[in-house]
Length: 116
Image 1: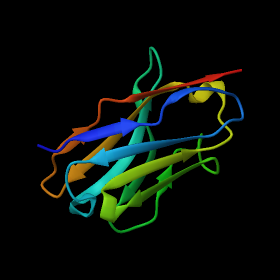
Image 2: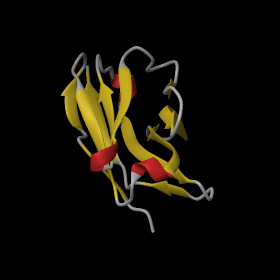
Image 3: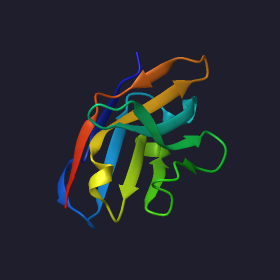
C-alpha cells in the first residue's frame, strides 16, 4: 500500500510563497505519474500540476508561471513551489501518484489559506 504524506501548508498573505512537500513510501521513480491537485470549499478537486515519469511538467493555466513541480528521487519526495499566491489559491492540496499497474493513490491533504 503506497502512502503519500503532504506537508508545508499554512496561512499566508497574498503575494507570499509556500513550498509543499509530499513524502512517498515507495520509490517515486516507480510511479508513472505524480502530481498535485487542490480542492476549494464547495468545489471539485482540480489538477494543479503533474509530472510524468518521463516528460515535462504540466500545469493548470491558473498556476502556470507561478507554481513549479519538482521531485527528489533519492529522497522519494515530490514538491510544489508556489509563488505569488492569491486568495484564489486557497484550498486543500493533495499529492497524487499512479503506479504502473494503474492504481491511484492520494495523500491526506494539506490546507493552504491565502488572505488578502
